[in-house]
Length: 189
Image 1 (cartoon, rainbow, N blue to C red):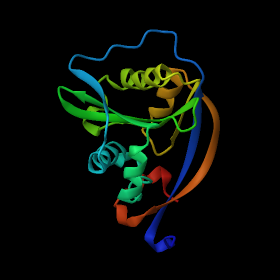
Image 2 (cartoon, rainbow, N blue to C red):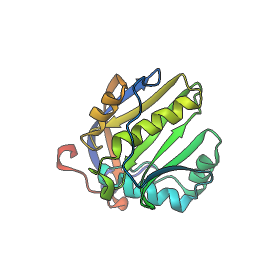
Image 3 (tube, helix red, strand yellow):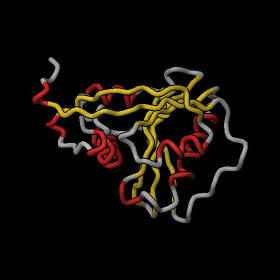
């Protein structure tokens, strides 16, 4: 059963699809002191939801919020999916998710920092870590998408890292009211 318009809020977004076909030649930027990135070999559903909701809350990340726990657990258990967490002085600060289901292309399904970590000089190095991890797997291409609901520096960061825009698509999102997400004024229908 799909939600009625009374059960949803509408947001107008433009989604930009990007692609990179070879690893950057320039050396990766160094992380500031105290920053560590590790792969979660078995990410639990509650842990993933905490990462996803904390990172994506300000940017209308809602699709995985409505995914039932059983479906999310199955997705996280797939060998093609890996979750990587960045920590600053032992405190989780963000994550990225790689999905190699469309091998030899890998998709950077989610990437972001928690609100407390934004603006502290780790974003570019963390993005490069994601890029390098994908190409270290032997990928022939890395894809990602971002949208006008994401942080305003997301698209410039992807382009600056070497991604090229493939296409842009205008979408209308019907976001369930029950999620309690705030629709930014510039996206309100």
